[in-house]
Image 1 (tube, rainbow, N blue to C red):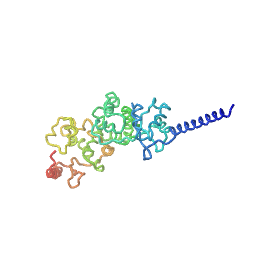
Image 2: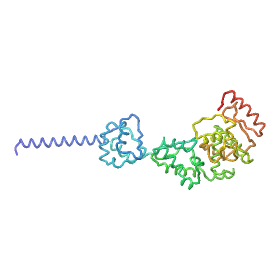
Image 3: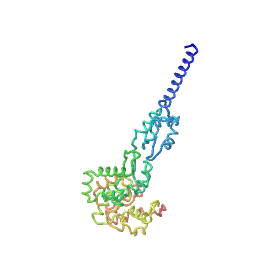
Length: 349
């Protein structure tokens, strides 16, 4: 073999080695080099249940230095054919291999919070802002007649199943699965102690929830709730109507199908609204909660203060609190001060 041919072979060999080295370097860079573009320690990625690969790439593009390199690795690892929905956390400095592995298998739960919702519609809208499903899907799951019947609820009492709290769930949890989990939480909340107290008061779970919603609407002061609850328990035991203004407001909104209106003052004509929620017109507890009561309001009913009060009105000398009365004449005196303050401050509606 001539020296010339040897030189050619050596050159070809060297070029091959260089090409292999360049190719290996490229593969290494593509797979194992850091590929994040954010400055925080981590970034949160939310992939919807029916997302396709293009949508995933679109969501990831602002977070990555080289989206094309990520796409290459994702396709090599067959991720584009097996997309997983959920909430994922990408750490700063992750490489493409780590990123693909993360969004393929490390779905992280989120903390869902809710309270103070007036209706199932409001709750569904609130949940849709925290989880993957839309508000209509949540509302349909909550109103499902088969579920309600099986669980012992009605459309009127269903809101009471959702105990205000923080719950850890997967972001892509279906509305039905979320609803079922909340039923489990509801039954856990109603432990032996709370059930015994409800029985002692003479109210069902649904009635406790309905009464608690009135108590919370009447007073924002947690420490005052057992006393307000005591007033209503006294009235129930005497066969007196509850005469709770918040129930009239709810009845008016329901009758007019307008829950966006703001009502600051109940008028005498409102007391004639023909609705089971109008506790001036009908005795007993309303058919369901007029609001989502906090745990403090629920426990305020179950641990109501035992006293001889039958009336209360807002205390204009100590805002947020109320003046309580044992007799109607005493209550009327307290009420005069309140009405005078309302008129002086122009609260007409």
